[in-house]
Image 1: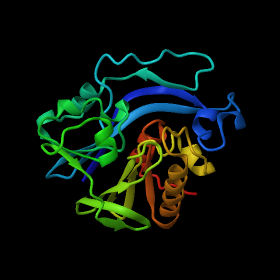
Image 2: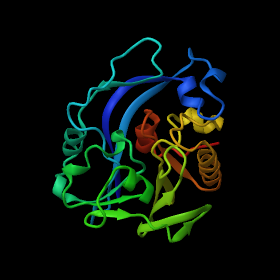
Image 3: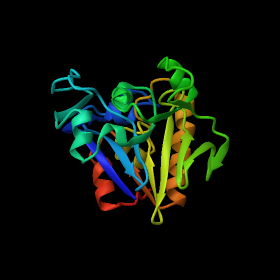
Image 4: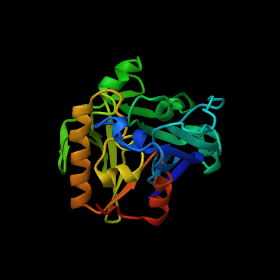
Length: 249
């Protein structure tokens, strides 16, 4: 079993109102306090399958320029998603499944590059994206529970697709059990690890109350299980993976 980061941007920043202001409001925080930012998604190679967690932007995405006072700057472009994926030594036709944390384009824009992959996504976000019924699109049924998460679905042994509403109405997280650790691919539950540690909601797009429930469950899970927290929007996402660094709260 291997987990790899598909890295697209690095060397960016976000300010504290963006990173921490989802619940209390941006005005409660200091815009001069900044945290590192990046953009990466992830790949799971089971030996039998190649599974993606989210897919990033297509080539040519007009990334915002670096600007003083900007709430979020993703950083300098390393590679577009398809190039970064192929640089890891894989071909698009090898991908068997894509697990989508939520509908936003930095997590979904490159789905079309993988014609053989089953796309697992929440019903709410599938509808919001106007994805077709059936075919390669699998709407999560959440017929199981997992640890302290009441609605979940097993993808394969040790890999779980979990309802985690808030950032979007159909937000999900993915947890992989491997060698005694729990790898949590959380999408945008927080935009940086500092927000998780401070118990602050990052910017929420659709359901603030549900986002608070999700963050509480995520923190409870991490406190009870040795978890490697794999963020999309900060360098700790790939650093935690490289070091198998267990999150401490």
